[in-house]
Image: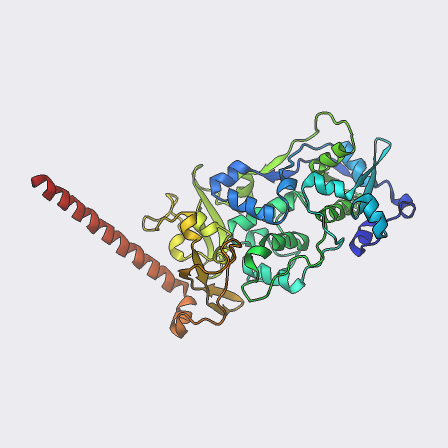
Length: 443
């Protein structure tokens, strides 16, 4: 009931909810697990740290995700069981409260009140005006085809492992484990995709099918998004209680800053935070398991080549500051199952060199799968925005090139030929250098 009221943007009145106050949390929650947070050392090892943090900033989640706390089972259960959200009914009340409204909850027999604007401050959320997110459904579907696909987005079937770029997939794990914490994070919910949309809207501007992106048109407060999810735990508790089973709670760590903000004195936590580390990623089909400890192969499904492995770190191809990498279809020569690392003939570029180029694309549709041929061009436009631009209707290769793109085998052969040619060339250069040194010594 309360969660539906939040979704509709109505004020929740205490008297209406008296008979719902005590949800059976203590009875149904058999254990509390620490909330799982991003692991900086792991991100650095994979070469994705700066880019994941960049997306967190764009989604306004950086401060929130950095609050890595322990959890308190009893206090968390009581807070969730008694939580109510109250929205202001007019502008004068908003001005008095300094925001959209306030929450109330009871812990250890004491009732507490906290303004929503205080929650904004605690977690570093901007002060949004809306109380219900408004994302274009077609925009979300187009975004999914851009970052994952080719199958359409379905919250009950779309998997996190379908996201091709490792930066965006790691970001999803951060969102699914913190803002919407749960034990099973294998699938992507609509609310999680909305947050991915929010992190990419200012980079992409449009999806690869040309749809303009607008993000959340209601400018919804992220505190309200969080509170809406916390209210859902009442439904969760009631559901598992009626089924006679027991569940676990992963949200307790998020509640500690709220408990601290109302002045509660807390002792040692019952559980410590967990992390999205290398072992976790290997168990989530993010990294290949059978590799040496210091080698990392990212597992993803290439739109044209199928199941593929990419050695990490590989910032030139995983940076999210260009659409080429958000769409994420590395050339066959970049994909390497040799545990030794990147191929010898792969040119090395710094991120600065890489971002000095604009990538234009030609889309060829085949069974909802696009393959893009990218040609480096001098950068134009507003460099400060670091936006990716798309050349619509461009023909950069003709029918023969489009036909070749449908045949991954042709690309593999071309990649192998390129590798062989470059190796032969380097070998001849080394021989020539030795000859020149010998001649110089004789002189």
